[in-house]
Image (cartoon, rainbow, N blue to C red; front, side, top):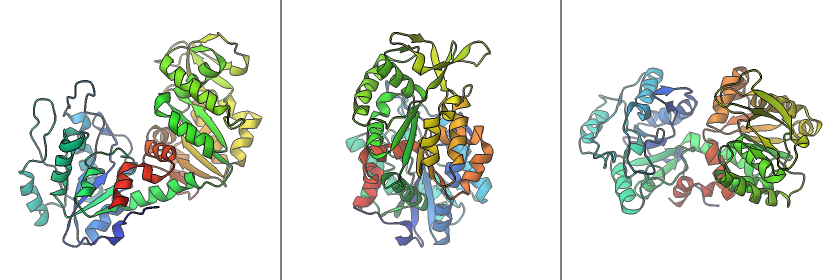
Length: 426
């Protein structure tokens, strides 16, 4: 397999180092969990210790309207909260350049005015530069010549490129394109993530995977791959509801026909792997979505449902499901557990998620791999003591990007992540 160059191999003394991070932790201008920022600090310290100067860049949110192509530049997707956090935590000064947007299309590129800030960086008037949200630039997610132009502009700012953004797995200008113009290396976080990712490719068996999500079409390929590699697979969220509709011929309110059609394909695939998919028998049906009110929800047993039955919204897997004999046996005997799942509709329905995470923790011997995003957020919100203990427990690993893990599992290799592949090609 192709390999990448690690940060330790780079000559950084006196160099400007362009670092792609995944600091996408800001929602409506507020940082709810700095875990992904803190995870990159080792790379930043190393660059400074070796005599380098860094320019950081990340995406924040989705400022681009996919239908119109317009890019909204506003405080809600600004990097400024991240900059303030880093300045306070590391006691450093960071410069943030300003550019002019054109006709709701975002920034057309890097303006020459940034050279004054780079001069200040070289003269130690500031300690680093943090570029604006990469998705504020029209070339970031563009294709062809426009992306190449932006990637070339980014590369012109620095001498070396370091990718420490495992969670940013799309082939954009700032993640993959820039590698074509600069010596490129994997940061410490990237190396750590890929090392732990290997535990899903070469797991200790039995290997149990738990996956949830809102759209079946975004998960079906990775679920199919997990059916082949895992010993057991557990579903949650909307994709579990779609699976139930497809397999048992029931109707669940809010489940779209497109998801059911995808789920029917998956049900057929499951027939090739009997006994692998472990169904959670108890689900919570609710009459309303926006709240959890006494009398408006109830527990249903899927084993009692008949073809043609109609349910209101199914918003959680009931905690009793994780007390079933078969479910207890699967999780207690597992040697590797991968979790990219929130079992209930946040923030009102969380009984199933709490029961799942608590049951996993009871298995003290298994390697426990948690995906990023909502999975990490809910672990911290619902079981803060377990979350803090997991950070220091060698049996746990919390990825900074659950989507990246699923994409790599789908492709069967970390080479399936285009930014990693770009590093290896260098």
